[in-house]
Image 1 (cartoon, rainbow, N blue to C red):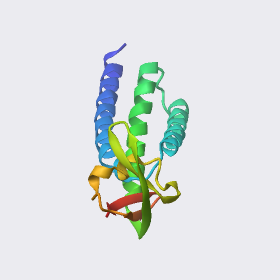
Image 2: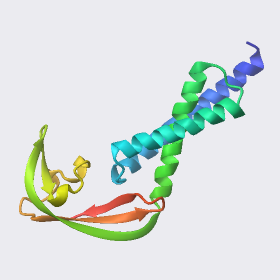
Image 3: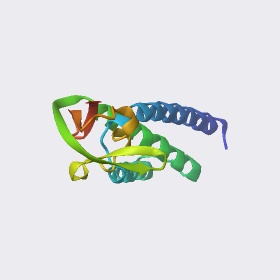
Image 4: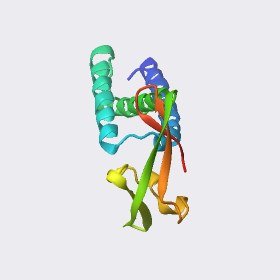
Length: 156
């Protein structure tokens, strides 16, 4: 390898590492409040990965498998972070009230069971220890994000 290629490769690596950590910090902060199921998260990741691979194949001269994988992972995290940031811009607000119909145990956590199986896939918003034992219903306050995904504002 020549020296100029190594210099470019080092700059690319540093850029990707910085973008990866920026993206991870953003995702860690914004993802818990976004009402995105694991399936939808997976589908978004597949979509962004497909776009990344097409761009790498047709618009770059990257041939090293390690660089392709690193670029895809860092780009995916940053794209998902940008997706969450755009969605965190409130478009409208609404609230939903659901009756508590029981308590279920999941591992060491007690979870409220809500009517019509509301938010069954979102364990973190139904934890019993976050709310009063006397509660007979939960009221969820949401912001509808710019991209159409609900973002939890508060729960009472």
